[in-house]
Length: 475
Image 1 (cartoon, rainbow, N blue to C red):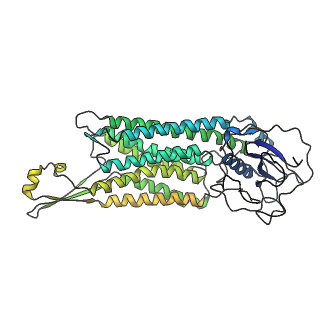
Image 2 (cartoon, rainbow, N blue to C red; image 1 turned 60 degrees about the vertical axis):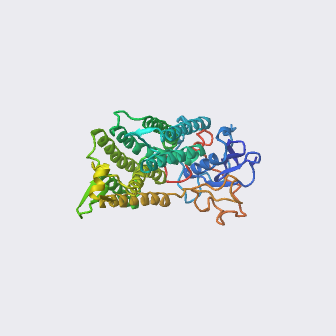
Image 3 (spheres, one colour; image 1 turned 90 degrees about the vertical axis):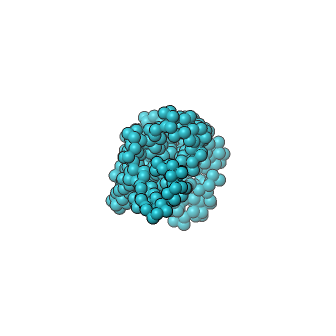
């Protein structure tokens, strides 16, 4: 191995280490020559390098490499010009003292989270067929079936993302967490709906148990991701997982919160409108669905839905990086979209006169016809919800590129490009030609390895514990 390359972590296929003015990834069997990818010798550079390494290497094989004392190399001793300085020694020592879960622990937690989510989804599917409430099953009514299928689809996607690890683990956990927070109130409202025989069916019980299992799964995944990130934030002396956003983001984020508040308010009034016409020409318009015209337990559930939507979106607006906050906000918005879809399906179906206390015989005598539609407040709700989703897309697009992303000499790792990798930029003096530059990384000089991510000679951080990109100090 060349004297100016120091390998810090090694896996079955790749190795992560430091060159004179860069962090790099090499093949584990050939840690010499040009690295497969490299990053600037900065705190952000190490964060991106670790995340990339963890995303292409099996976390169970990652381990630290014992390094003998190395005499200081000649040449530059700081990061290349144009990059921020490295943290103080005290900050580096803070990381060394920080306890972080090892890759095997994170893998176990991810698998357990996925198992809990899988169990919850299975219970939810089983709950579609027995009696749910009012003597009917979810599967027998399309307007009730559709939203529950959407919830289960989100939790299934969350389980898949959690198993993929890295930044995707956090995206999946936050997406599922937002959905669980809002659907809590919806299940409370369902449980509070009066049953035809005074008791609820097995479908509701299975549905609630499924929600509990899914919520436990996403909570475990979220806590695991935050535990790793907490160590990185402490080492870098930065802000926690929440923080003030740049000034140019204030207006969109305030708009995001106002859109959530508007959708929550518009969720309460009546959405369904029915016009009753008789053969004699008499007509009457009736609205239904007002959240506050229900039994107390149902009102409680609906209020919980409104509070959860606004609270989750506020947290998402404060989350760093915002692209992860977008996953949390989108997870909360999806159940609200499901409610809108349910309302559209319901009004598209024939309406029984029994709903208005009129028997079929009486309806036939009167020549009664019923026309169903949606009130203006429903479309106001949809407008607020659409604005919320568009702003979630803005959070991803405007904050999805990585800070300190690597220049890539000679192509990318076989694992494929990082999902949030930004265009390559020169990472050190002499790399002005960008990726594939014949000059390669410098072979002389050196710099102390003091970064804000896991120290190259410190404890083993959890694989995928450092997101490759986003704002500094992101969870």
